[in-house]
Amino acid sequence: MVVEIKVPSAGESVSEAVIATIIKESGSYVEKDEEILELETDKVNHVVHASEAGVLTLHVKVDETVAIDQVIGTIDPAAKATSAPAAPSAEKKEEPVSPPPASTPSGDGARRTPASFVASIGKETAPPPAPKPTPTLAKPAPVKEGSQTRKRMSGLRRTIAKRLVEVKNNTAMLTTFNEVDMSSVMELRSREKDTFFAKHGVKLGFMSFFVKACVAALKELPDVNAFIDGEEIVYNHSYHIGISVSTEKGLMVPVIRACNELTFAGIEQAIQDYAKKARSGSISIDDLQGGSFTITNGGVFGSMLSTPILNPPQSAILGMHNIVKRAVVVNDQIVIRPMMYLALSYDHRIVDGKEAVTFLVKVKELLEKPDRLLLDF
Image (cartoon, rainbow, N blue to C red; front, side, top):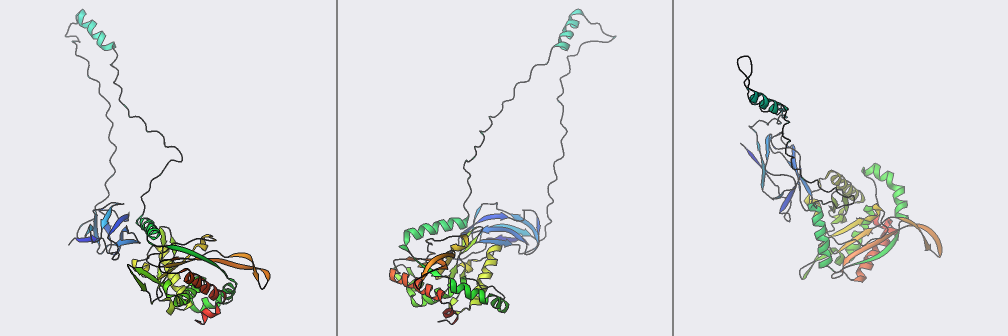
């Protein structure tokens, strides 16, 4: 019985996909659960596997747009794989055959008249007519260096572009800044990282400190953890924090659920799991949905300062940056400290400037006294 291959559902908001890669060619034999092709949606890529073993027949080609639940091929368990077409054998090149000369009587049994003799000499010595020149197409002009190259935008890139424009047009985005002395976090991390890894099996990074600090600040400032829906404000009572992850195919924001209930180890484990998924391209739609606040770290690329863009429908996003040793004044003394600029972009329709500044100050205070985070203060 022939089995149909359909485009699987990729979430409620996804209605179509693009054939990104064909892994197994039509006519080949596939094993059950073997990868057949890769679909690209406006959120993530999805690999389609064979549900049965058999001969594969595909009805699509690369870059073709297909609808969810559309039949894109079949698998016939009873059929045999078609062998690859044999290479065409080299055909013998036929030499052009000259037309036989006009027959003239010759030999002992025939007499040749003077007229026929003269005619035969003319035929034997006259050169063949020159072949007519074959018309040739004009060669295309050579491509100049530095000319343009066109490439189709991926579904993910199209979605990113669309959402960035939507944020600009549909929100009153504003960014406020502060700076934090990272000395205490760095000292605590350096002191406890070996013990932490031995106990939990994951490394103690900076992100878990920022997640904990943001959750504490969100509890005090609920508007930052809310969003606008029409003419209503929806307040989130959960703390699902999105962490921006850069992949080869673009930026993704997987969500760490219920961060208020997670320990440092739980947060670091979730980050590690998402990093593995990002590298393997296996982040799912569910991993990307439901966030109430986002943290992005441009510091991993060397960014000193930026204005992060909101991740709709969320109302705020925190931008981390690189840690740089700078001269600062502490107790009327100029000292060298590892400093980081923080940026909070927010929707001014729902978050006032006072709340935004208060949020950043709260995050700054907790990071400069991280022992309070460990005590859930």
